[in-house]
Length: 291
Image (cartoon, rainbow, N blue to C red; front, side, top):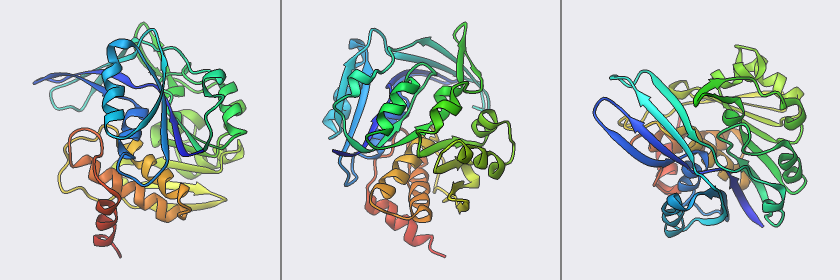
C-alpha cells in the first residue's frame, strides 16, 4: 500500500527558443515524481513510454523512485516553440501514447492516487471510478481540457466531467483551466460548481498571486513565496501538488499543506529542471516567512 501513487505519461519535450533547442523529459508524472524523491513517503509512479525514451525511467529509478512501467508504442511528444521574450508559446503534439487501463492498475494499492493526464484519452473515466474504490483520487485536470486538432493543442471543456468528478477527492487547476471547466471567471464561484459535482478539495493555483483551496465550504488563501531568483517555472504546479499531497498524506491541515506546497514550488523556480531539494529546505523557507 503506497502513500501516494502517480499515474501519467512521461513526455518527450522539444523546447525551442530564440537561443536554443532542447529535448527533455516532461509531464506531470515526471515533475511530481522528482519532487518527491527526497521526501519521506512511500511513493510509486505508474507510467508508459516507448523503448526510445526508456532512459527517462532509468534516471528516475536511479534517483530512488519506484516505477511501475508499461509498454507504449510511442511516447507522448510535445513541441513547445517560444517567441524571443518567452511571452508566447506555440504547442503541438507530435505523438500520443497508449492510454492506461483498469487491468494495468488492478494490483496497485495507494492511499492517494494522483492522476496527471496530458491528453483527454490518457485515463478513461472507468479507471477513475475503479481507483476511487481503493483510495482517494487526486486529479490535475489540464489534460482533459486539451484537444489536439492537426497536431495543435486547443482548450476545450471536459464533456465527461459530471460523470468523472463524483469520484475525485482533490482537483488541481489554474485560473484559466477553472474558467474553461466551469464557465465562471470567479474562483469561488467556479470552486463551488466543482464542489457541487462531488470534489472535496479544490486547489486553484495563481502563479505569483499564490493559490486558493476550497474545501467544506471554507476558502483557504495560500500566499506565494517569492523566489530568490526566477530561473525555470516549468513544472511548478506539479511540484506544488506533490508538496500538498505529501503533507495531506501525513495528516497535515489544508492551510499547512497548501503553504508547504507553495514553498516547495518557490524553491523549484530558483533552479532549472525539477525540484531537487529536501523537506528540511522547505521547512527552512517556511520558518523564514513566518508571520
